[in-house]
Image 1 (cartoon, rainbow, N blue to C red):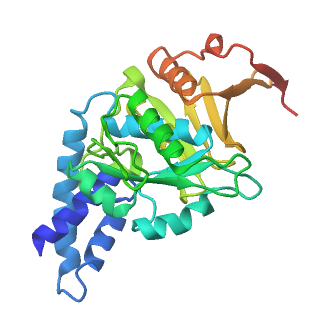
Image 2 (image 1 turned 90 degrees about the horizontal axis):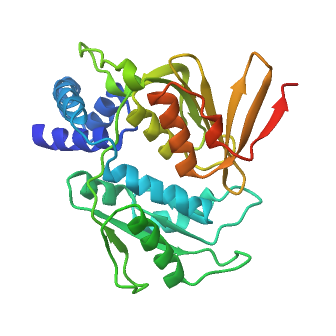
Length: 310
């Protein structure tokens, strides 16, 4: 029983979505009617949280999971819905993925990996991506074309892809999936507070209405952790994140219909903001400058518009 609980907790930790109490609760639910399972789950979860956070401090600045999400966001912006850890299985995912298209909008196709895929990827077994077409699109693609776009985006972001172009086969990606944990997602009872170095600190607030996840109060994060928030934010209208540097300069992003990503620099002294639509790569660069140089990089936003506050 202990090993089963431990494996369940390790998967939940790597997915990076649930806090300590939720992980314990979900782990205990897997062992129906087992006496004292909750106390055992809490003990194991505390051990695994400590081990995970210690390992996280050794990770490279950009992980393969980051590269996967970069590719997914590029695909989203090109008209292909791209989701990680979507639904419980492939059949359910295919039947539900149309719900990821906002009302009144269209997409050409989709790709996703489901929870069973994620469990394999967490243990280092790689990911399998389903993909397909939305037949009611204005310009419907063929299924192989969607597969080629997905595989191409993954390769451009430095991932190893196994796919021979056969539309009957899913796309294999060599990736060990793991997400950085910060704020309340990185705390557990009696655990030490995770220090955030001032060298690249950002205070981050965000809301992902599609996932029911938010941080209303500023969460101190490293640049790598803040990048994770940006990449994981579902491309659904009104989902937003705000990044504040050490000298209170800020950059804020919001997903709009399309999907398009709007980025702006608020200027509270002049009561105005400067902004425009950006690529994900541009957003990452601007947030990196804010974190490392503590600078609002208006020079990286050519062609921006300026509007006064109402």
